[in-house]
Image 1 (tube, rainbow over the protein chains, first blue to last red):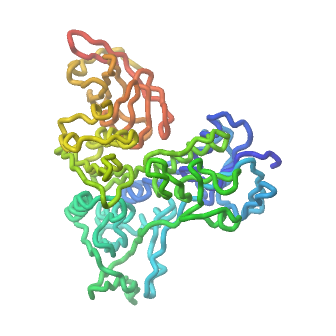
Image 2: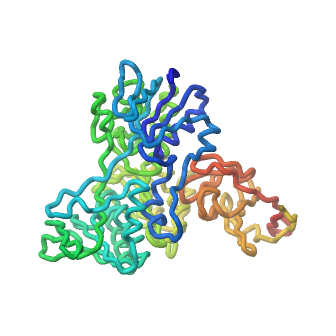
Amino acid sequence: MKDYGMVIVGAGEAGARAAVELRTQGWTGAITMIGNERWHPYERPPLSKHQLYEAGEPAPTTILGSDRLNEHNIGLLTSDAAVRINRQAHNVELVSGIQVPYERLLLATGANPRKLSVQGNAAEEMLYLRTFADAIRIREQLQPGKRVAVIGGGFIGLEVAASAVTKGCEVTLVEVAPRILMRGVPEQIAVMVEERHRAAGVKFKIGVMIESVDKEVSGEYVISLADGTTVNCDVIITGIGAIPEMTLAVTSELEVDNGVKVSELLVTSDPDIFAAGDCCSFPHPLYGGKRIRLEAWRNAQDQGTHVAGNMLGAAVPYSALPWFWSDQYDQTLQVAGLSETTDTTVERDLGEAGKLFFHVATDGRLVSVSGMGPSGGIAKEFRLAEMLIEKQVRPELAALSDPSRRLKELLRA
Amino acid sequence: MSSGQWIEACEVDDIEVEDVIRFDHEDRTFAIYRTEKGDFFASDGYCTHEKFHLSNGLVMGNVIECPKHNGRFDIATGQAKRAPVCVDLKTYPVKIEADKVYIQI
């Protein structure tokens, strides 16, 4: 390969979106994606949800299959990984020995599950979820009647718990923090989520430290908790967050700061190297330039799409609103924007359709919204709330709490 | 493919201005739209990406956005406008008679 093309390390959501967008925006040279899994780029959100419990042979939900890769003339190297960036020579060296020259390089390397550091002889036997292979491994364990312990009450842990209980497992969820969903979800919604899980039969151990994880001779796992109780189970699945994959950035001496450090243009400290998705931290213009890193499907998609333009020279700052969603049972939970503990929370009760909570900063600006309800019920209102945040409106609190006042009108005001 | 049969879907006033409702007929589901300009359109009810009802989505101008993953379609033509959707939405002719909305399927 002599062609200095666009090279993308990472064939996940961000990488795949960038590849297509580069072509859509008119790049005619080579585009090469390097993925360390054996699959074509696939969607990760289903891994913790229906791919864990639905009957039938699971298959990854492909984002870019052979036909679309061919249509866009995008090269994909699977089961290979970049080991070094030669910034002077402008090429990337792969495990397989191939050297891929680049004009511009995108790091879309994602993140890896944070490992739980704990005493005991079974600490290495806990299962984690990130890839399709991980999902298959967990799925095999989720048999009716099995006792499943889930460590971590964030989105992944809760979704796995919902899937496991749906499969007929006996599920206990352990969270060391004072409540579930501590990160970015208001307490009102956390309470609704926990109630829904309890109704489905999930047991909770909350606000208690884990002392050790051991395997008995019988094959049973025993999680010993600081309150003196134990959780005895057949399988342990741990979801306690993710760590950005930035090895390449570190070894090639790019700046890092809780991820590959990029500017608002998503460019690293090397002007020919960009980063997007879970692996990068970036300053957010809607929140005073605060540096954040998001582990979220939509951010990966939006940044992947956005960065393509800047790789081609557009120089447009990235400012999309942070957005997260989680599906558990028949409920959907969404959070948009970033809130602070000093925000005022206003509830909007939509009855059977669910509830929204608006978070208003001390200066009166709407900065975040969160909501929960049956799938589809809150979608329209939630989307309008996002637009209100993007417009940086200072809404009348009474209008937010009154469901008969239309959000579309506030948007036009 | 199309039998050309006209079906009564709803009353004009069943749909708010710049909004969408769901209409089920036999074993099929449709989305019926009313734009701000007062035009009516009809399409398949499910998003072409995953099986979610577009009727729960937001209409802004002539665009419907899927409530689940924010894929977008042009209401009038069904054209896919934003990832993750890449397959166009099938649309159906609409006529208004005596304040009733009919679609041809």
